[in-house]
Image (cartoon, rainbow, N blue to C red; front, side):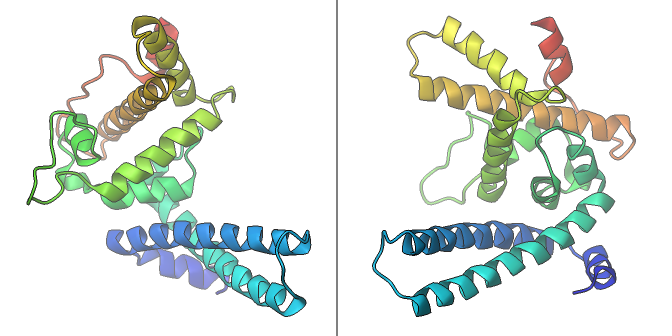
Length: 231
């Protein structure tokens, strides 16, 4: 697809279609990485194989790489025109793929509060999944939030980062206050705190910029930047 066609197609995408593109992007990426590893093993003589097999795998990897590239370009154009995705991309660690995934799962007309968004993303510990009933949160959004949290951690040493540093500060605090907890538990709690603060800040920014008009009920008493400054 040429650039003009991609941009025109991106402008017509619905939220449901964007959710599919994001999901397909990650699926293609995972498959391509797996095949690239197989090719690398063959070329290093780790696995028994032949040239025909290696060429076949290379063609398959290239097909997945092309799918990644097309989805990447479509989502880049869509995110740039979407208010929620555009605001999310102002955050260090959040590029257009994650921003598109977040925006594709959120109906701005129903975004009543940060708390409602937390619950929808599976971050309300009081909500339980009862046997025989539908899952009370969005599993795909929860997975995306996990990826956002991991991305924050990766960029925590970037001078422009906020939420990776929130994670680290919270991790230090959790370790001090709860020495009985295992490192993995502290990691998960701290990552979850950073994600929730990020989501709350997104809701507040949407309200401050007039994208949503109702009271966002920002449940955190301070923004991510204020949290860091306080500590």
